[in-house]
Length: 554
Image (cartoon, rainbow, N blue to C red; front, side, top):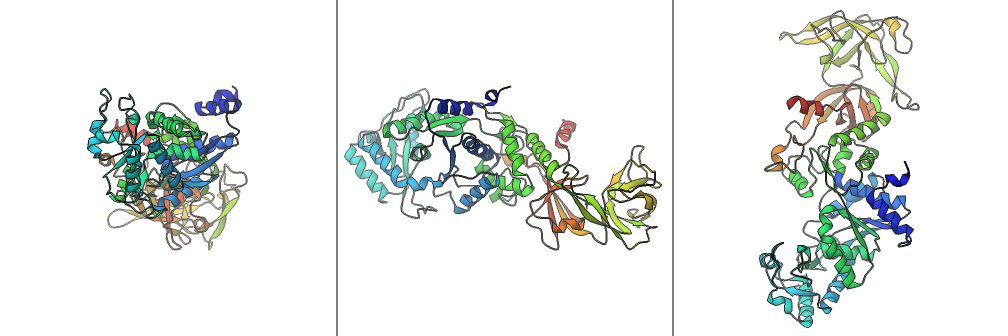
């Protein structure tokens, strides 16, 4: 199959434009509004815009759409920059719509001078009524016939702060009978007496998104302005402004946004989750934010692979989150170092082990030929998982039970000889014997066992807290569910294991590095870790168990 057949429709457009000599090189942009943290849906747009420029030798600008001072903060600007760089991309220029406020204001004045814009004193409710309906044309009001001179003076008075918020707006004069509601004299400037995070109190009038966006694209000579499908009705207005102002003819193209099961993709809803303390913050590992996924241990390469696999489509669809988890699992299987951590410890005393202890070696990653080995201390007393012992085992139970043998990973074969119970009948201790000739790597015992257990030496065990994260919502299509989306929050989305024990090698590993805890899943150290108390987040399980649970409950 040729490479051409693998092109998505936007790549086909780009290649056609370049072949026709329309542009010397392409320029794209990623234009987030700094009113929240980026989520996985933004990752798709980032990969597309930066990927196009990389593939075709162009460049991508990072431009902050900071036209609403009420909702925007410098914190969000910094988080967005961190996320884009963490995903593996570098922008050509860091720009802001606010860089262009003087030019955009000049564009508005030019429209007024051409009698293509007017100051309207109507309330927002009156404007909505006057616009009509999709089946009925709008009706002009008395302000639409104001003279150019009057409009220029009123707009200047708006700029000078002579009017209160909402008292007046500037509207484009287009067509109140248009089939496209966005063309029915849209508002292009509104009054907002608010401090802007970059321009301070210089302005009290701010351009609307539809007026700032296309003009910013034109100022930057953006060749391909890629956005999501909800902006299709805005394209006619985008083109109208560019045509009337005779500025660089940027072109808008639309693709399907990412909708994913068991998540929300709305900054407004994500902000609600944060403000109402349903999560611990924007970077809570259950959030669909890029910072949350980074904290959970998702590799940037896995997110890029996911975005590549889902492709660029012209129609909205719902992507199964299992595909993202598959990409994460596939990446971590190749890169994550193996470690042993016991979640629910049960002490084992190896009764015939007479040495003071020894240092064994275990491979870091069997998938990586150059992964090397690590030192693992072994001693007379170890911890194993409580559920790795059964007093009365079933027929196919191959772990520890009276008289039954297992192999300890990278160590010896042991046999359970006896166990101790407390007054309540709970097993508190196992007494086992080991086979000295069965040491991993030099086993001459001739004994074959079916079970292999992970373990930790009690004398060297490091206390750890393990946070087991699951999906934040318990319905597939959260956006399509009836009622309040918060009613569908999964109350079991976080389970904390407070008293786990880890092998000491984990003390020397870095935060953010991916680990496979043997038989448990993939994990990473959390920023809450301290030298005396390690904290780990579950990134993803070894297998997709959620699908089985859903099927079982159906």
